[in-house]
Length: 394
Image (cartoon, rainbow, N blue to C red; front, side, top):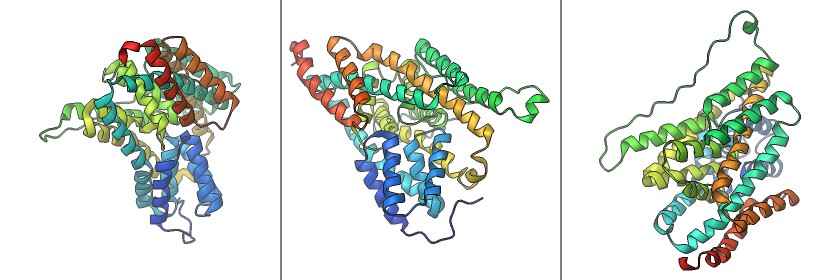
């Protein structure tokens, strides 16, 4: 069943690509805000996309793993221009923020030892904890609500993430299966036993080209492809998974560097997930950044264009909805657990505790306050406070 409408589109593919390029360059506020901009501009102001097509794209983006805003953009590109539209629109939407984080990665790698940059991230790291905490709280209220089954899944993942300091991908799948079997059990469940479901890591291939650390790049590609394929929820949902792999498992970055990487994602436009480019750069330079970004966004691209023609028919089935509810509760639980883990590393004294708490209060009190504004203010505070506490550093 095709989603392509019979009427000729009122815009060219080039116009849509230019719009997404501009949105990727100037769009701050995270996935929900970016999705709102697309609706305001493409549905209401320009009339390029119908309300029904937009809602279906948003539903698919929420259903599939990966970054919500990027998947929505790809789906909107697919509506009238199919594979080429999804491909070019997705590339245009991600490219600007990727270039920005790679440039910041270069600066961080070359000047990260300077006292002024340490001071900036001293304040920003504490603000990031507050931002993630508020994100977790809002997601919890929105996705878990008063549902006891979802609360059980949520709390289990929160505790496991906190104790292990990592995100266990198969528990996400387990959460989805529990929601499915409990809410909309398939008929075969009553006739036979439950067969075990195992998720295998995608194999990462490597070639031989002089100058590249191909084993490391293959490892980076495999890890970030798994992140793109298994992380449900938008924006900061990927943070606990990245922390578990990048810091705890592979030891590519230390705690300080990881929090700084999340902070970089907060101060740049476009999808928050683009922090993978920054991480990849710190691990293996520009090739690492490219491989990390491709690994993360390729699964979400496939999860958008492959089911798109069939989504109208199957997307609203009770079994599908129950699976998504369970896996989303697991994702939010993992985010909550990661808040505590990251806070232990970033809240190191009274000033950072104060910055974190003030961030939470401001975001709770002023609903429309943009995260980049908070991060910028925290950076300025860091420049003032850090030298006073570490006078020998300047």
